[in-house]
Image (cartoon, rainbow, N blue to C red):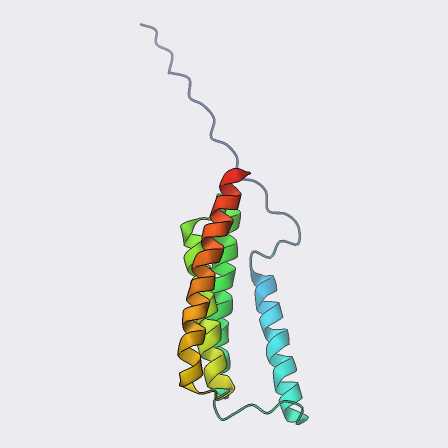
Length: 134
C-alpha cells in the first residue's frame, strides 16, 4: 500500500449565470407592467374591474406557478412531472382568478376549471413524451 491519498474526481463546476438572466425577476417585471396597464385602463374607464379587484393577487400566485414550471423545466432540461403539476396549478389559479375578477358565474367556472386541469394534464403528457424523444 502506498501513502498517497486516493485520487478523487473533481466536482463539475456550476454553470455561470448568464448576464441578463434575472432568474425570474423578469417575471416580476411583466406582472407589474400588466397590473399597471390593467389599473390604468380601469382608471380611464376602458376596463371595468369589479369590486373583486383583489383577485388580481390570485393571478400573482398563478404567475408564480408558471415561473416554477419554467424553473423546473430549465433545471431538469426536460419537462418533468413537477413542471406539469406547476402548469396545471397555474391554469387552475388563472381560471379561478378570472371568475372572481370578472364576476363570472360559478356555473360556468366549474367546467372551465375541469378544462384547465385537463389541458394541464394533457400538455404535461405531451411535453414529457416530446422531451423523452429528443
